[in-house]
Amino acid sequence: MAPPITDLCACCRNVLANGTLSRLTTFVRGSARSATKRDGSNKSKWMGVVGLEVHAQLCSNSKLFSGSRVQFSAPPNSLVSFLDASLPGTLPVLNKYCVEAAVMTGLALNCTINKKSKFDRKHYFYADLPVGYQVTQQRCPVAINGSLAYSLCAGKNRNCMIPKLVRIKQIQLEQDSGKSLHDDAGTHTLIDLNRAGVGLMEIVMEPDMCCGDEAAAAVRELQLVLQALGTCHGNMAEGQLRVDANVSVHRPGEPYGVRAEVKNINSARFLARAIDYEILRQIDVLENGGKILNETRAFDYKTGHTISMRDKEGKQDYRFMPEPNLPPLVIYDNETFPPNVNPQQVVNIDHIREQLPELPNDKRKRLVEKYGILAEHSFTLVNEDGLVQFFETVVEQTQVNPKKVIGWIINDFLALLKQNNLRVNQSFISPPALSELLNLLEKELISSSAAKQVFLELWKGEGKTAVQIVEEKELGLIQDHKKLEQICQCVIEGHPAEVSEIQQGNWKVLNKLIGQVQRVTHGRAAPTLVKAILEKKLA
Image 1: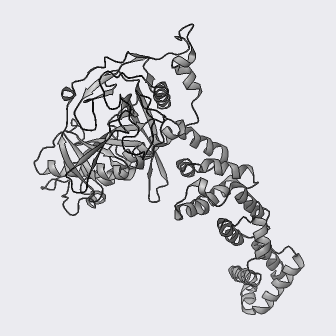
Image 2: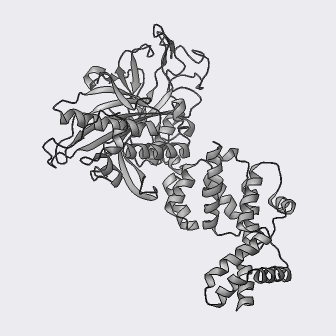
Image 3: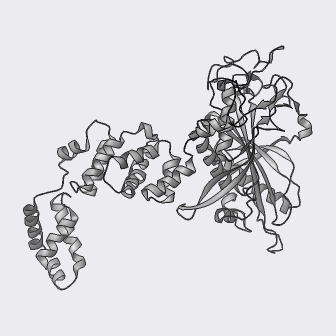
């Protein structure tokens, strides 16, 4: 098991070091005070401590304990079974696919899979929880003791990748609650039970992070892992991935401080802002002689502040008890697989391990080793859904160096996608179209400036190929060597002053003559060929 991460990275030092809370103060709107003691001493450095609880909605067509369908934005209370509504006499039936998804996630996160796990009742009363308790796995979860490796972008251009590791305490299966809908006047609350009983994985991360950027980077990496596995779509806007952040501060070498929990954050960007604000708020309270309350807080994205909601419940408040309607969950491997049992009726750890896909971190390493691209470029490819496949398809269909291909994809293709708010599968340029264009450029049939022009024409989505655009726009390079020699001779004769300077040894002026040739040919002359012809004539 990895040790807790206690060393501050460069980014965190900028946020948390004495007197350098500039990044955080933007969220405090002038109310922040320096984290340094009033006497000016340098003894009161503070360190943030952050742990996360991530609730991931499982990609299942039905709920965890009932056969009700799972569908986002369905009409209110249209997907509710008798069990979801807590009618007396109804009993839960465990969804096998949800168990397999939790096991697969645990394996991907280097967890130990408990071959025998148990369900508990966690008692609390909300109107959107009809039965008055949540079925979860608090004491004996399906997976424990894992880790998630991720990288933090640092440096002026965010091109320095700092490797990080956060420990996974446990992964537990549990059911979601319903949803409370409040009217604009705040006088009425309606209950939608469509979400009640939907299968969740709660992924509990140890307090190994120290600032908002680290937490946001860890959640983004987890999101990519879940999407690669297909166990969770990870759409935070639809509530498929929700994060609770446990935040405290302490001085290095001293015990951890009292923590506050910031609930239900549905954006990685908001998560970073909420944590950074909460760290500064707690420092501010402690520096002024106050005490941090063990409480639950919410994040207001409009103001950038966290807001107190209620006192934090303790384990004794939840009155955990074994779930009497569900037997222990038993999972097997090849060695313990029971004889004469239908494999479709049990969950086999080894069988699931064989189905694990290539995970994001492994994919990045493969891209760097196979194509020789930079590590930060591999992050860009993997982080954008569908971009790795697009890149590899282009590389396969061209004779161009992969490093040149990655330049076009990141600087031109991805930039246009971002500009038009499109995904890769919505692009107007297909991998074969870009491959054809890059092949023309590699064979020196068009110039780089002409290639940019063709690229923009392809983006219009008019169905024309790169070759057709080059012919229609007359963008191809002049292949007639004698014609180029005549043009170069005319340029030399028309610029005697520049020629004189070159003959006196100032060959830098040659670039001006090359530019004149490009102007005459409208950019259709190969610069290397033009340079060779001019040098020969002026030698």
